Amino acid sequence: MYLGIAWLTVGYEYPLEWIEGGMVDEVARAMAGRSLYSAPSLDYVSFLYTPLYFYTTAAAASVLGLELWTARLVSLLATLGSAVLLASFVHGELGRAGMVRGRWKYAALGAGFFLASFDVTGRWFHLARVDALFLLLLLAGTYVFRFAPSASGAVGAGLLLGASYLTKQSALAACLPVLAASLVRERRRTLLAAATFGAVIAVSTVGFEFASDGWYRYFVFELPARHRVVPARFLTFWTQDLAPLGIGVAGSLVALGLLRRTSPGTALFYAGLLTGFLGSSYGARVRPGAWVNSLLPAVAAIAILMPLALGLARVRSSLSPTRSAGLLGVVLPAAMVIQLLLLAYDPRAAVPTEADRRAGDRLLRYVGSIEGEVLIPQLRFVQTRVGKRSFGLDMAADDVLRAPEHPAKRALLSEIQQAVRSGRFAAIILHDDGWTRRVPGFGSYYRFEQDLFGGTTVFRPVTGYYMRPTRVYLRRQSGRGDRG
Image (cartoon, rainbow, N blue to C red):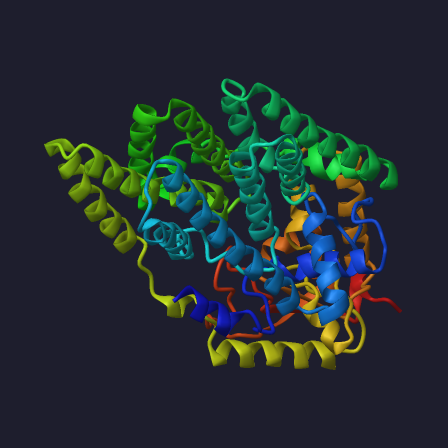
């Protein structure tokens, strides 16, 4: 079912999620050889991510062309790669546990569980976002560290984990518990992997910091730290976000218990993995603006451990056919079936309709018909198809503007206000009236003209915050907004 959804949506010409266009703008900047980190301005504001996804997609776009589908293809391939790695984790671990035949059945269950979580993790698998590539590199580094027991394997694992950090900073929270747990049994290899991981972070930080005149530090470290957490999510992460995966979490704990009886070192490694991946999801989700895509590392951990519990129970039953082993062999498969049923969803909600596509076409025709510059804060990249500039706002600017007071925030807000007051834009198209409050007296400079979609739900993204440009404001030709 997931592959069918991907087939129908990867090539969709408009955003599946409202920030996708901004991500492609960053890819375009990387292709042009310009720094991804610079002073925030109306023309460009960086996202709060490390840069590897943008450079990876830029390499793909240099061959395939710069489009939304190119950026999504990178994520789709990364998602499929993650599914393969999760299956390989289960297959390899059951082999070490002594299972000779039937391992691929449980391995396929791990990959299937992961793909079945498409809806509960926010329909994020093939979006033009950093998460899929981040998860692939995180799993690849963890897999190499686990199954390549050599010094070169430790170095390779450190490089891959470093690459995952260079895609999304939350890799740090996921990796540290894994490495800490491994120190107990494999001190030399763990220190080698940790040193390599740390070197990647240190060298890249110094390099990007120097190349960006200090803006790398602002966007990657300082600005995220300035955002306050959302206290309500301390609890709702466990009671709401993770609730549909509750059986999987319980099954993962069963797997750790079974491993502890036969291989305490292995149990310790996977306890570190579960702690780190859950902690990474938790730490990301409590941040303002976060979505349920934050659950992806947690789901990956469950996709390894829950099928592993089923396989280990079978091994235990074959070696020691006790009553408790037989009961476990019945309960765990039943629990897995129930867990998969809890992940069921209607695939139609993830696929834009023909009406959505037509609405997007109408929007672009309208924008293209306007003489002069058009500001669309909640839409980026797409308007370049009709010759209009894509300004650097959306969530990137929101991250700067909602942080506590800072010179960069004052400068960006002042530039936006001055552009509106001077009547720079022939039209401004907004999601709602909330954005207008950033410019005192906005109505003196621009007048409301029309709602492009007339209160209907067409052209709403299929995931994330339902941002879409619909309310049109035209420049006033007299009064304070008159340009003479």
